Length: 417
Image (cartoon, rainbow, N blue to C red; front, side, top):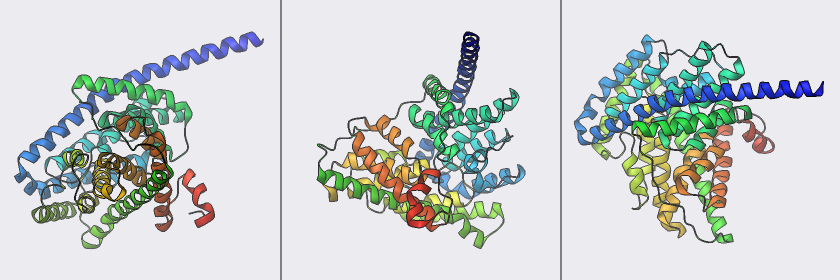
């Protein structure tokens, strides 16, 4: 009798492994091709815009077009920037498949005409939507549907930012709000690795950053790292506060989404004429420069403002690139005050602000290791932990619901939200 149970269990296990291997391959190939092509197209659009600065004057028209598309599909353009948070986190079924082209067009138009945004929102929305679509076509249950969405989200992120392991973890952290679904880990990892390899065949090039080098981990260095974590957490809070409230400010001035899109474009043009072109588009060149040349102290402030103007109206793209920009330039600007290598402080700032603003500590640690090497793991963990803790105060102050881990950290101090 016991032998029969073992055989039955073994057969079921083999069946499940084979099933998820096939699904991971299907998802990985599709996402690698589609999101990889999206990444290349967006990169080309960003470079073309930088060589043709006059395109910024068409940004208001692009805002009207993006608004019109979202009105036609009966979606709030601002929620498009948070598609997966608003729909997938609540285990929503039947995410409309048309969100794939809608997200693509919105993000491409924003980047091509100079709106300050990232590329993560459209990429993960397309992949998450595809995962939901595939689950419905195959008539999978709720748990399997969630696993496919998690795998798609993580794989897309891994392709866009060349971080397959961090991508696999991000899918669970982002979609499940701190409640890890360990059954999804292997499918998410397989899908992420496969999609990253496929994307390289499409022509996506790996991102290279300098390795972290902080020297011997002394008590003084630990104190410096704690202070850096605190500062990066505060910058992340500032970024979230400004961007989160930007849509409310637009709402006080204008209700019509198409006028809102036009207005967002006009404001961006005015700011560009006053402050220059550094804060338009993806901003990857400024991020790269932050690792070799000390950045201006106000770079992080103005990038936050430009991003709030774009994402608060109707423009699409996401927050990851802007937080990388904000964190890297802020870290670069303050590095001399800490007597630490500029590149290393810029690196910690880049991932630290990302961690604080997105509340993804495990993903941030994995990403930092993938980007900057494993030589300074303890330093990375210290900075990300402090940054994540600090970011929880933003949730408390704004009365937002804390994730599971954050609520346990702040329950004694601030009570449950």
